[in-house]
Amino acid sequence: MFPRLIARQFCIWGGAACALLLSCAALSQTKPGYAGSLSDFRPRKEVPGESFIGPGACASCHAQKSSSHLQTAMGHALQKPTESAVLRSHPRMTFQAGRFSYQIVSDGLQSVYRVTDGKETLSEPILYAFGNAHVAQTYVFRRGGRLYESRVSYYTAIDGLDWTIGDILNPPPSLEEAAGRDIDGDEARNCFSCHATAALVNGKVQLDRIIPGVTCEACHGPGERHAVAKLLETGEDSAIFNPKRLEPETLSQEFCGACHRGVDTVAMMPDLGGLSNVRFQPYRLFNSRGHDPKDAHLVCTACHDPHLDLKQNEAGSDSKCTVCHEPSGAAQTPEKIQNKGAAGKRCSVGRDKCVTCHMPKVELPGAHFKFTDHRIRIVRPKEPYPY
Ligand code: HEC
Ligand code: HEC
Ligand code: HEC
Ligand code: HEC
Ligand code: HEC
Ligand code: HEC
Ligand code: HEC
Image (cartoon, rainbow, N blue to C red; front, side, top):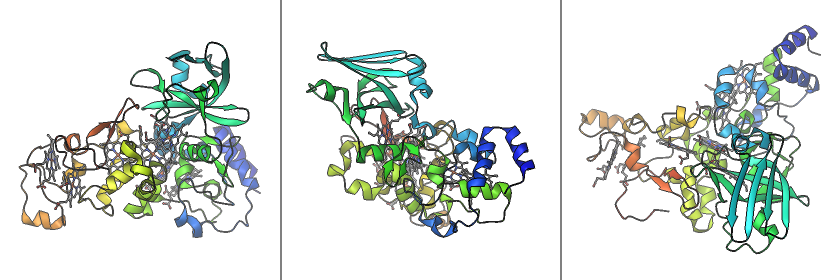
């Protein structure tokens, strides 16, 4: 159908554009419009009838967003063991607990997870590394056709292995159980759909066609139709989901919250997730007294551009706060207060570095990491962690 000349020109540019063109042939021109169902798209939700094309294809037109997104932790939330910088730079890692010894050995071709109680040894190749090791990296292996999460994980702060969070077994009952936690079924479905793209088909994990990491189409939906229509300029429906058009509260709670866990999800958890809910930023932010989740200044994307690495963001900059609160001592005319609605109170204590006091870093036991508490508040000494 498509002009061969264009095909040849694109194929000189490289594999991604080639894959894109090849898929043109497969895309039937009579597919029903996607635009109608666009506003319903949410991450982790399947869109029947639409196909994924992979981030390489987006890069040919959205070069800047694509190259910056490659630097993000989200883009590397799931990795093949050969792609894991941790495994590559640590050819042998060990951990000892009671009679059990753990070992992860990598030789550049594969990584093997080995656990022994001195008598018997269990040994399996690692299938996937979960997490870009901003905090930690956990391993998933297959045994007897089922998926298991490794009982030990790599933690960046200690540059070594320790118990996977929530998994301390003291003492572990059997070699099998000491090695891993069975996550086959529902849980694997959840893990892969939060850490990867195109993870599910008809509600089942499909590892043969999964795209590791939270890549473009995890957030923008399957993009083949858009990519092909833009490339060939067919004038056909070229729409793709743009989260920018969501209401702020929907963006934070339902969109980012689909993986980072919004208030509705956390409300269903026993004990509201306990202290672990410091990791559930949408929930924490929602409960910040006085801070309206409908206000665009407090939406996740006001502080985090998901196409940029956390370090490149100015998430902690004072301007995110002073847009509503004047710093201490600054002139605050009644007119300014009126323009900012209910906000405008100023701090009697600090002038700058607002987040260091009002979004405190909280140590999560077992995580070897201090998470930023997104519940913006006055922190009183000895006050217990608010749930
Ligand atoms: C052949 C070029 C091309 C390819 C390939 C392509 N896009 Fe686009 N895309 C465009 C153009 C042109 C626009 C409209 C102008 C703009 O907003 O930059 C656009 C717009 C968008 C928008 C904004 C849509 C809106 O309604 O506001 C998003 C989001 C997007 N693209 C994502 C993607 C993703 C994800 C991929 C890969 C699956 C992709 N694009 C592949 C050319 C392309
Ligand atoms: C499909 C699931 C998914 C969605 C949707 C999602 N995230 Fe994430 N996000 C993750 C995962 C998984 C990680 C952990 C990445 C890692 O370190 O391995 C993460 C990490 C992050 C980080 C930390 C980056 C770092 O360097 O440690 C930020 C900030 C973030 N996400 C912001 C957002 C924002 C803002 C949105 C909404 C616009 C969003 N995320 C939507 C899954 C998601
Ligand atoms: C509901 C979505 C969701 C599910 C399910 C989920 N994760 Fe995550 N995971 C995230 C998000 C979001 C982050 C980043 C924020 C944080 O650290 O909590 C993350 C962070 C991580 C990290 C730390 C990443 C880093 O760079 O430090 C690891 C390791 C991890 N997840 C492993 C797993 C494993 C293994 C499973 C399944 C057994 C799993 N996750 C299930 C969303 C999810
Ligand atoms: C974690 C979720 C997430 C991922 C992953 C992601 N995006 Fe986006 N994207 C967003 C959000 C949220 C917006 C709206 C940002 C805003 O409000 O300005 C957006 C907006 C866009 C836009 C439109 C910009 C505009 O001004 O309207 C384009 C184009 C785009 N993304 C392309 C990409 C490409 C290409 C990739 C992969 C390299 C990608 N995105 C990965 C969440 C994501
Ligand atoms: C007012 C600004 C602000 C808003 C709004 C905001 N964040 Fe953050 N976020 C921060 C700061 C500051 C950090 C710490 C950055 C650092 O350590 O470099 C952070 C860190 C993170 C991290 C990394 C884990 C950690 O604890 O350090 C994740 C993930 C994250 N934010 C997700 C989100 C999500 C999802 C939303 C929307 C519900 C959101 N953030 C809204 C300011 C904000
Ligand atoms: C969209 C505007 C807006 C933004 C942005 C904003 N705030 Fe607020 N903040 C408010 C409003 C409104 C109140 C409630 C004031 C009142 O009690 O009358 C409030 C209350 C507070 C309080 C008092 C809470 C309590 O428990 O009494 C603190 C502390 C605070 N904000 C700090 C911050 C910090 C730090 C930031 C940046 C990370 C920030 N705010 C960003 C509007 C905002
Ligand atoms: C050194 C820690 C610290 C820093 C830095 C800091 N604050 Fe505060 N802030 C406090 C404390 C403590 C209080 C409570 C004061 C009291 O009422 O006893 C407070 C009170 C507030 C209040 C509530 C005022 C009221 O009358 O209810 C707001 C709003 C606020 N801070 C915003 C900010 C902003 C915006 C910044 C950055 C420009 C900032 N704070 C920097 C510690 C700090």
